[in-house]
Length: 214
Image (spheres, rainbow, N blue to C red):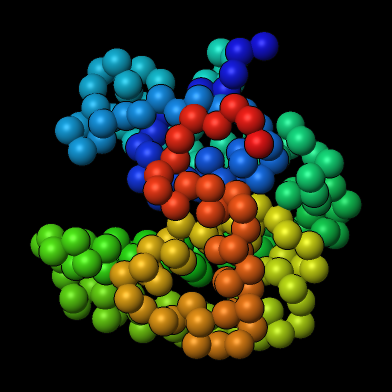
């Protein structure tokens, strides 16, 4: 069987999200690095496989799939024993609830704030007004996270799921940009610190790389 190929940028947040899940499940993969800084992801050749011209996508022995969370769900579904997508109906419903919370309540503000904080840290053009506004939104959302995490270990219950791992790239981006928003509340801090300490996340601190053994 051909090794799974991950087409993306080694420092791109969405590529790292997929790579983290692959590492978590010990799935060998080859990174095919796309030069997105020079627009390789907008070339006709690339867009044959990702029609929106975004990264990443995967080629799993001829099966092409794009959209980060769909990719992660597919990988977890291939390895159901991991429990990253619970099978029991109620546990699965709570997972889907948590995944929806990440997508609708966390990602929009965290991604905008994180991107501009990163640009600022690098000395590049950024928008401080966006940072201020989006961190204010995120701060209010994290009040709800604190309530949830005061009652359970993870965002979808007492077991780790994809919903937790989905948070990692942009939560880390916000922190690396200089904000302490992820560690102001005790239960959010506990949860966040556990996630960023996982070997699957730490493996790619210097960028995603081909990983064929664990």
